[in-house]
Picture 1 (spheres, rainbow over the protein chains, first blue to last red):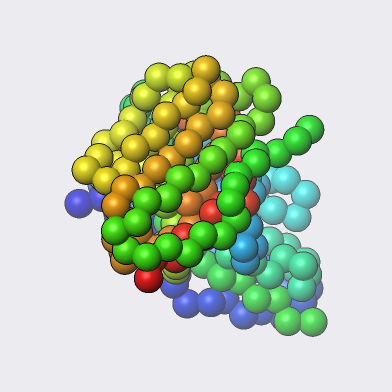
Picture 2: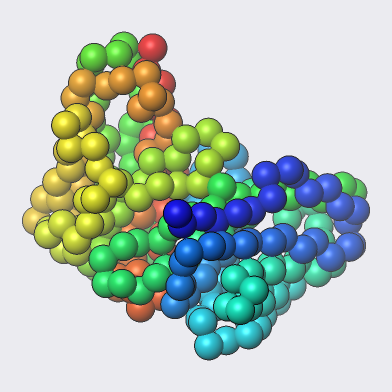
Length: 113
Length: 116
């Protein structure tokens, strides 16, 4: 069956370090992969999109990689700040023309000052 | 630019009662989605509209859930009758283009439903 795995355990890191979050998937062939940020009591907010033919995408302190062979995406936040503390969701789009995004369960990031 | 609006923000009902949620997407967004997010999980798509037509409702429990999109703008999601397992946050999202094509989605704040 199809599955998206994100580390369910919270990731705790020190301010200034690089946070790396993982998204693994099985039995999907995503054309696109998106990362969203969700704060408590709020809806997800779009961060980055990467296409299947792209290896890496950057936006300010954010970097996403996409390895379709390993079926994995890594999401990096460099020079992390306490304000980066949130839950980060990866979402796959198989571009079948019908289905919308399929989300992972998210990883909670806590950046300690 | 105004974001996606949802109401109410919170709702508490007894099981077997009915409830309705309202969503106003970003102006000009053709595609509208309703997601269910259970605590500790990611959002799960319930239904997707393109303008006022249904694109995908394969995960909508049609025996109790219904949704409509009036004139291709606002949308309502109804649950009748509610069950305990319907307790969740109901998120509405919109996008300029269908997600097939990689469009980002804009989410509303959600409605937190508690069924007692």
